Image 1 (cartoon, rainbow, N blue to C red):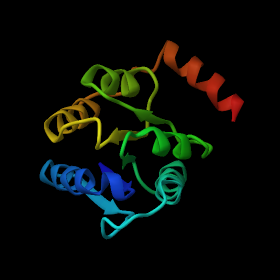
Image 2 (image 1 turned 90 degrees about the vertical axis):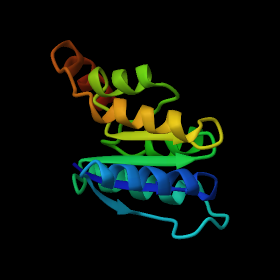
Image 3 (image 1 turned 180 degrees about the horizontal axis):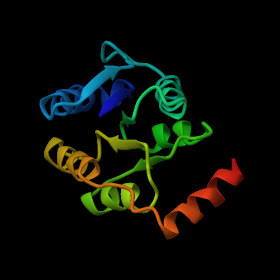
Image 4 (image 1 turned 120 degrees about the horizontal axis):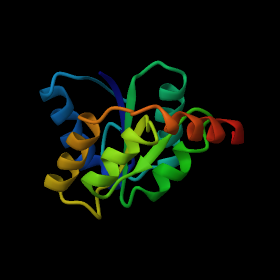
Length: 144
């Protein structure tokens, strides 16, 4: 898959780890920034990644900030973005299987690196089930 990834300063270290993990699993990854861990504003990177994914330029996105809350709020303002803040593997599987999430959001300050990578793997290994879930996504699309 083709990924775009972004963070703010509070998610920078985990972004670098996730990027390496995705590349190690054979995925292509575009880093939307930031390039260094200096203080920056999460909405800038959340919107950048969400717009690229919603436009179809990338298959999936990953956003990381301190808690994941700010990034998920920013990304979900973009029409066509379905950003899911996941704190465990079950949420990651359901985000893909039932909600067809196209952006995984993680919080560096609330997840250890091992758990974060386990959540990422669960997300990667799950496919959208379609069926009854398509009707529900259509309802969400009409809300945008």
